[in-house]
Image (cartoon, rainbow, N blue to C red):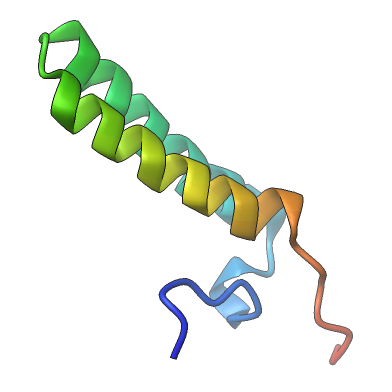
Length: 64
């Protein structure tokens, strides 16, 4: 079982993939602003993981 399945029907619209990628990066910015750098790095890493799987390495499933 994958941690994040990019072929799930929820991620078919591009705006949802970009929103899921942007949310952890935005929260990392909030944590960095509040000088909580460990949390900022953690959420930036989560955002990077989502960026890789949902945007950069995304291959649409041709079922439809």
